[in-house]
Image 1 (cartoon, one colour):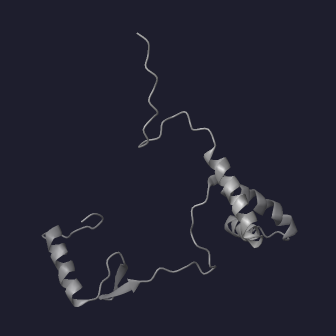
Image 2: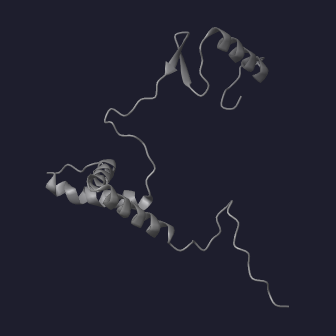
Image 3: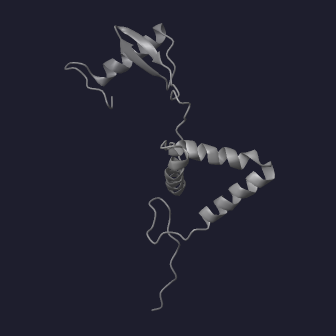
Length: 137
């Protein structure tokens, strides 16, 4: 059992058997989180931030640009510097407020620039390198 400290005299097989018994008694769902409080199992419900922000991955350059924009906006917002996530949200909503065709064209242009960048000189693990030209004897 990775990540669990077993008490002396208890084997991983004992824990597996206990979990199987528990599943027969309680409706446990695979992949869900539960916490034990005061001897009772409680389902842990994933919650959104109180601010309504969700975690998503963003390109480093987009995050940096959002930070710079947030700094610039500080004067206009009387000292309040918006979170970069809000700047990114505003940018996305602005792009999508136009026509679908215009929004798609802007997104496609960015993706093309992104994928047309020169490859790094070092090889990437898990990606085969291009075969080299045979050397002359």
